[in-house]
Length: 408
Image (cartoon, rainbow, N blue to C red):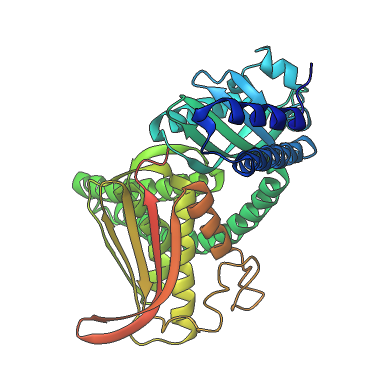
C-alpha cells in the first residue's frame, strides 16, 4: 500500500492526541517539516538533473570523462569514448581494454612517469593515443586525484587539429631559423678555410724552395687538422639543429649555451655585439634540448636585429641564469632600447612582426612561447628593462623564462 501525505498527516494528528511526547508540537510544525523535506527532494532531483545534463555533454562531443583506479582500470567513462577512442563504454567498463593500452607506446612511459612523479593535478598534459582502428590522435587531459579513494578522474579532449597546425608553424619557424644558421655558417667557415688554405700553400711553397723540414710539416698539418675538425663540428651542430630531435633528455645548461655560442657568435661578432652569458656550470635540466636551443637562437637573433636597426652605440646581449630547488630562470635582455608599449602585448601573436616582410615571419616569438609554455610547461614574460653596465645607463627588451628542472 502506498502512503500518501494526507494519510501521514492524519497519523500525526492521532499520535499527537495519543502521546504526551508530542504534546508540544503543532500540526503546522509537522507540515513545515514535510514541506522542507519536499523542498530537499526537489533540490536533489534538480541537482541530479544538472549532473545528468553535464555528463550528457560528454556523450555528444569528442571529449571524454574517465574515472579509473591506480591500475588504470576504467570505472566510469562517458559515451564520448566511442567518438575519440573508437571503443564502446562496455569495452572499457568490462576491462576488455585498459586505459594505458590506448596510449601510444612511445608516450606511455612518459605518461606513467609524469603521473607517478606529480601525484597531484596536472594540466595541459599532451600525448598520443591509438584508436581502435589504429589511428593516431593527439589529446590533452586534465586529471584530478581523489586521494581518499585512490581514484582518478580525467577529462580528455582531441587536439589533433591544433597540434598539426602547430607542427606546420613550428616548421615554418624552423626554416626561418635555418636561414639565419646558413648565414652564421658562412661566417664560421671563412677563417678556418683561410687557415687551411694558407698552411697548405705554405707547405707547397716551402717544398719548392727546399726549406721544408719535419717540424714545419707537423705544425702545418696540426693547424689544418684542428680547423678541419672545427668545420666538421659546425656541420654536426647544424645537422642536429635541422634534424630537431624533439625528445626530452637530461643535459647540462652549459652544453645548451655552448651550442648557442657556436651557432650565433660569428654573426654577432660581425656586428660588434657582445654576448654575455652567466650561469652555473653544474646546472642540469630535463627538457627539450633542440627546442630550447631554437628559443634562445630566436631571442638572440631578434636582439641582434633590433640593435642593428637602431644603430645602437653600446651593443650588448645578456643571458643570466639562476635556479631554485624546482625551477631554472633565464633572464635575457639587450641594449636595443626596448619594445614600444603599444605593441609589447602583441609580440607573441602568430605572424605579428615589426620587421620587413623579407626578413621577418612573425613566427619566432609565437613558437618560442609555445615551446616554453606548452612543451616545457614553463612560462615566458616580456617587459622593458633599465639597467647599468660599465657605468653606462642602458635599456632593452627583457624576456624572463621559467622552466621546471625536471620536466618529465
